[in-house]
Image 1 (spheres, helix red, strand yellow):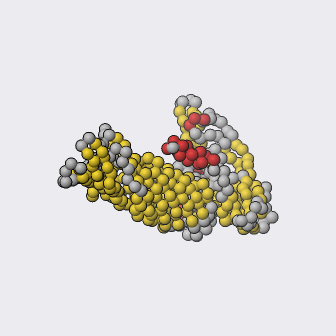
Image 2: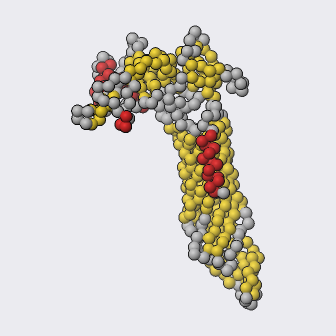
Amino acid sequence: MKRIALLFLLGLCLQVSAQKNYQRGLVVLTNGDTLKGWIDYRNWHVNPTSFGFKQDSLGDNVRQFTTTDISFFQVAGDKYLKAFITKDMLPVDFGNLASDSAENQQTDTAFLRVLVEGPVLNLYEVYDFKPHYYIQDSTKSYRELTYKCSWDEVNNRVKTRNYFHSELIAYLTLQPRYDKKLTHQIEHMGYTDKEIAKAVAALNGLTGQSVPYVSNNNKKSLSFYAGAGAIYSTMTFSGDDPYLKAFDFDWKTTPAIMAGVELFSVRNFSELSFRLEVAYSSIGYKTDNLVKRSGSGTDTVHYEIKQRNFTPSATVLYHIVRKEKFRYYIGAQFAVNISRYPANALTAKHQYTTYPSKIDNYLQINNDWPVVNIKTGAIINRRWDVSITANVWGSSVKTDLMHNTVKQYALWLAYHFL
């Protein structure tokens, strides 16, 4: 059953990646008309060439837009502008480098993601198999910032050329105030959206004018949450102990509290999120009138365990449904119960004597023991999180004589502080 559950979880994650994800947005047609509605936003890593659009979020009338139909669109905090560009298509990954003298230019009409808009330079990004960054000055033409990696056949080594450093510094020298600190920043930055956008925004700021738009390139966000729930739990034993062989506790319900932080991606991979969480619970197990018949008579046994758990965990979640105000997820959780036992006592009343036997700390129960769970739930209005956690594996006793299995199901209600 454990293997089936894990295979089901993996298969489900692989089959739902093509789902629709309509979010509020707007498009500007090539004739200048503006349409507001819902765009099928796929958290694009590679710049889109087309997308679905509908003006009614509940309707089925979907229009497919391409670069032929529109000149601009905006969705999920990102702006995309249609432009005719020339791209450097030489690879930059070390496994496929071309020779130092190679050239490969390609023209394209593409949707450029807007990174910065300002009085000196606008900055855009196109990603196909590698990132391309374009600047636009007062001439309104698009110029690719040049970054090349090639194989130097003469010296038998990789050659990297950061031409984009000097291309940006050329605009810096034209400003009324020359910023040496910004020059140093540009000379040492990498070819990434975060570093280049930060430098271009700072360059625009030297004019003393406001920078009207800087995209949010922080692709990861944190969400703190806290909540409470109820845990439904049982414990069963197996082994050769004369009292606890084939012994099990009845199902018990106990309240619990938890708090944590969720790491998720605003763009590109928002279907996945990761959680670090801590929970606290206190549960008591006990049973009466367990009778053990032996050659010496019948014993009536009372056994009680009180357990307090502090449980840190790590969880990976796949968001199957990803709507603006509703998300449904499923995932796997690995946790460690850090447990303390105020009670761990067995009392046996013997048929042959009036005095019962009481043994404290009867079992050697582990203070720290791992748990594997499957978790599923829904986030409503981006804040309310209702979830169920089911135990796949967990054991707190494992000796040569005895072994136990702990089964737990938990219902949680949490609130995300956005």
